[in-house]
Amino acid sequence: PHSRRFVYRPQRLQVDPRRRGEFLAAGVAAAGAFAVMGFFTSLTGTFVGGSLRINSYFVVGLTVFAMMGASAVSQVLLARLTLRPKVAYGLSGMVAGLIALAVSGAVLSFPLFLVAAVVAGAGVGLVFSAAIETAGAISDRDHRGETIAGMFLAAYVGITLPVITVGMALT
Image 1 (cartoon, one colour):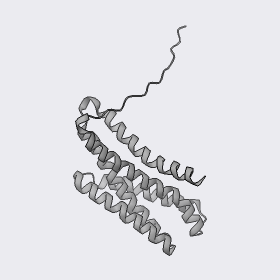
Image 2 (cartoon, one colour):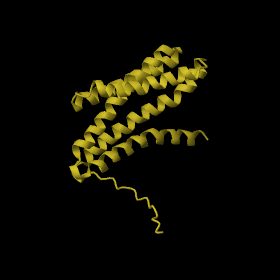
Image 3 (cartoon, one colour):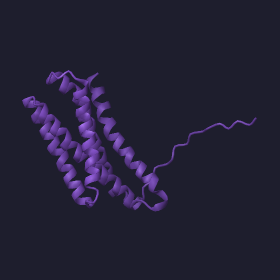
Image 4 (cartoon, one colour):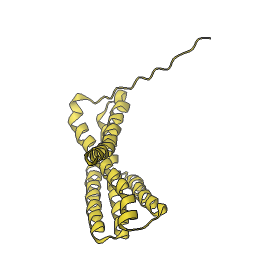
């Protein structure tokens, strides 16, 4: 019997050199959106359980679900928006959500924290949607997968690099 050995070969990411500036801008936006998502989700357990003294995994999970759900719902409900308003509304939602997060921490308010998560989550969804839309628009048909994969990589760097950096700084 002849056995074949599986060899993993990562696919190369590819961006049209003439469109790298647009890709970079969208990649930074995607990374920033995922960094906001990561910040909220990593903070939720400590804030809800510690600062607010709500010792409920259900409430923590519900808060994270509300943020992720708002992200998904905003992408579906506002899919017909053009790129510029999608980015503007998304960035505004992320900033407003972060401000509401800071205020909720100062006044120790769970309802305000929940609103902050939903508003920021909706913003994250719009910014990420705009980034993926940009990647698709600037890629040629034969390399669309490589370009969109690069945008996902940028987003994943945004959600992991800040967490790793803070962890290293604190240890």
